Length: 167
Image (cartoon, rainbow, N blue to C red; front, top):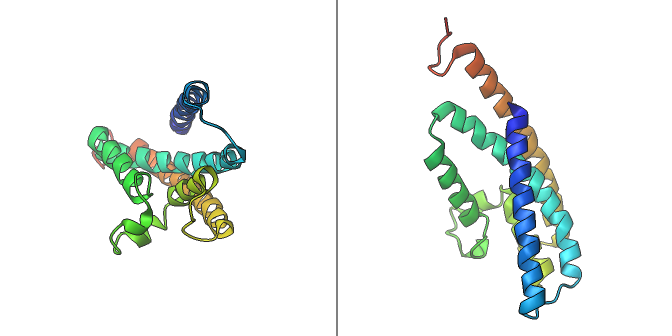
C-alpha cells in the first residue's frame, strides 16, 4: 500500500514536470520568454519540495483511510496548502494568526525560493535559512507522513474500517 501512494505521487510529479516543460517551451518559442540561471537554481528547490509533498501525500492518504471520504478532504487540503503556502500571493499578506502555520509548511519556503530565483523577488527570510527550513521540513514531512500512513494502514488491517477487530 505504501508504494501505491508513492507511485501516485511520482506519476503526478512526472505529469506536472511534463506540463511545466511544455509551458516553458511555449513561452520560449512564442512569447519571447528567456530562461536564465533562475531555472537551474529552481530545480533543486523543486526536487526537495517533491520529497516534502510525497510526505504530505502520505499524511493525506492516512487521513483518507480513516475518514473514507477522499473528495472533499483532498480538495480542501490542496486549497489550504496553496493559500497558506503563498502560491497566489505572498505569505506576508495572510492574517497574522495564520502566518505561523505558513512558516511550518515546507511548501512556503519552496514557493518563496522559486520566486526569488525565477523573479528576483525579495525573500521572506535569508535564502540560506529558507533552504535549511525547506530541507528540515521536507525530512520531517516524509518521515511523519510515512509513519502515519504505516500506522493507519496497520490499524485498518487489524481493526477493519469500523474500528473494531474484524471477525
